[in-house]
Length: 160
Image (cartoon, rainbow, N blue to C red; front, side, top):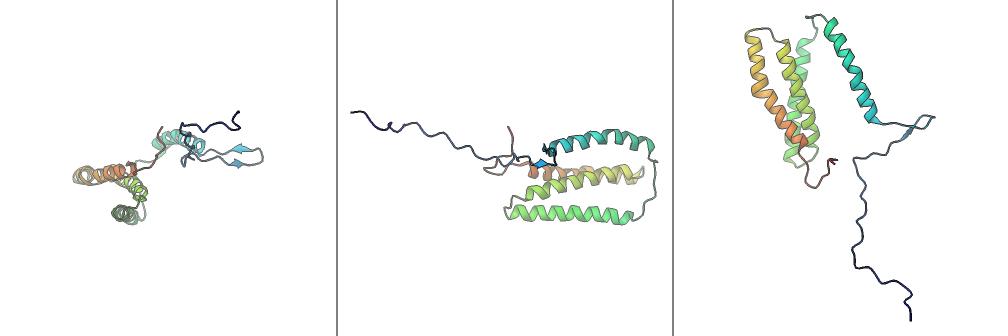
């Protein structure tokens, strides 16, 4: 007598293909049905800024009088403090969102170090700006960058 069904295979079933969170399905935009890709917008914008940098470097005056200078610097330092506090609190709670605040705070600290040094007057002011950049702002930025880039346990960061 022949079997009406095939015997069950002893080989394990192939693993189900998991949906990848880092691959976002492009949405159709416009009447032509073109797919919008954020990568192309970012690449195009970055490339468009390159000639603009040349224009700025060759046409801007070497000095400028700025209104609300104190508010600009106090605001930047307030954002840095907020970022450091938020990153510390989120990390202490074990909240993975500390990586987001760490990344933003890293950028703020690098910008602060850059502008402190390029806007400082020669002499003691420049020495103080360089000391702050080397001893405080850039080391804190490195810590924030390390926190932002650290892989969460069990997470796939999209590396291939």
